[in-house]
Length: 77
Image (cartoon, rainbow, N blue to C red; front, side, top):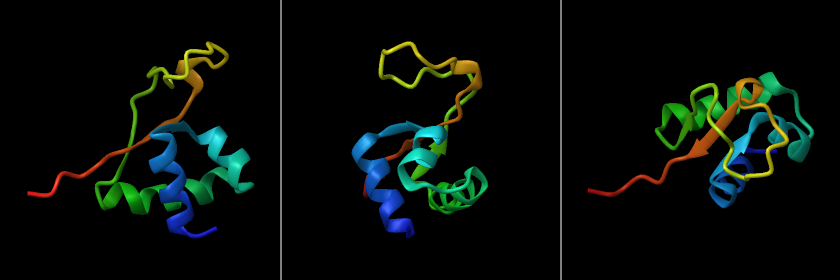
């Protein structure tokens, strides 16, 4: 997987749990955190605070234990 695959998936899903990314890309959590860090440093992704709901509404995950990331659309000035 390359950074553009991660970008495209995040743009499509908007907000996603790290566990879902691990399952989708069959990668180690730390490797994905490193890739997410590249997008975070560019201002395109942010890690959401602990306790934030994923937004799916299913209620299956404990928000306190879920590491969430969100794609941030930049507005061109």
